[in-house]
Length: 204
Image 1 (spheres, rainbow, N blue to C red):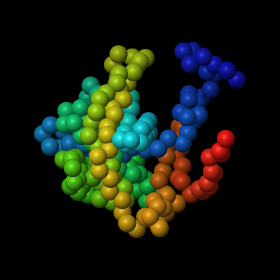
Image 2: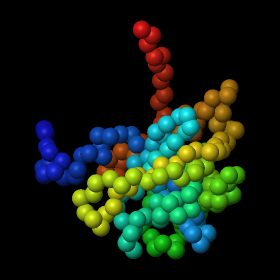
Image 3: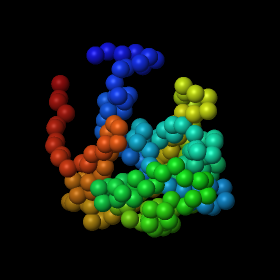
Image 4: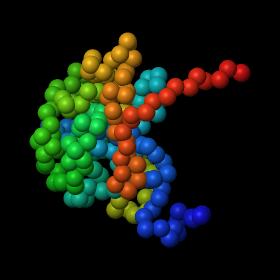
């Protein structure tokens, strides 16, 4: 089949998100200007540079109370955020924090998670997560949107500090198979990293 994204595709659901897969989940923790914590997962998330390390998360759509979503608003207001790794063991808690709740809701408490202090930023980390990346907010980029009331904006942050639970280091390498990070597919589907293979880049 072929369809133009500006028109109907004839399928029960838009297949786009099932084609760009798997997408890592940025479990973003922030503080608002009043110091209240917020935690939310973003599946349009990735690392985009390595030297220095830079990550991005895309906030698509509006908050239920209007305006941009809390993670984006907080990162822009405070200049920082934390990316926490969402793993198989934390899948239900991660899903709980995806709920569309009021701005004053504490998602840490909602999901039964423990906020712990970071080293270099004020935003808290998720204690239960084995990996955290403390980030200094860099900039936001506005993307096209099909509706003025549903903003699409990408936030970039430089990773300035990384926490890794030593239990997930094996001979100096991150044991991704033990971490079991989860990723988003299309529809309501997710996947978990369990099969890992290596390939050596060819020399020409």
